[in-house]
Figure (cartoon, one colour):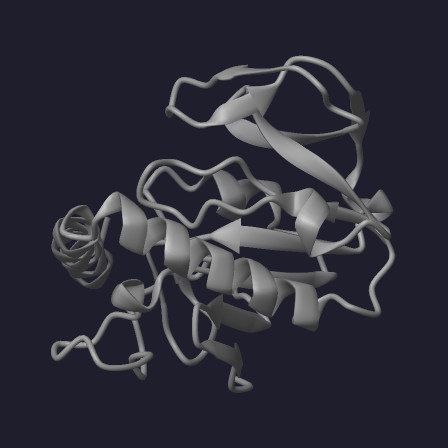
Length: 196
């Protein structure tokens, strides 16, 4: 690993730690209220969408979305860890806790990326170019490296990293393999990312 790449990894780790501390400070009620507002923003954003979309089952510091409330016209697929990457399953009714702590499907039908119209990705932070700061394991980056469909990032406003915690930052540290989102949704903002 070269010095620049090592610096990026260290900086990402530092930002990740700061954001997780801010998220832990949110009360359960604040998270519920903000999650409901994000759910409404997603409903507005996806109002004309159909087909199969990737969603997620939240961790405690991610927005908790009731996907059936976002759209009844969209069929939802959920990620499952398999061989150091993610696979996606539709028609899932049963879930179990994954090695990372989120609920993953144990039922349903596996789908390929070519069947998916869009993906909704949780993140700890995003920048104005759509780069996502996740948990540092690279699962979404590996799984979606060749995916050309719509990618929408979601996070609490608290997660929009800047030194002053006021808005999306201009640029998070990122590496060449990091997947970019097309839009970022928070409880009070739908942001279309800048072209690079």
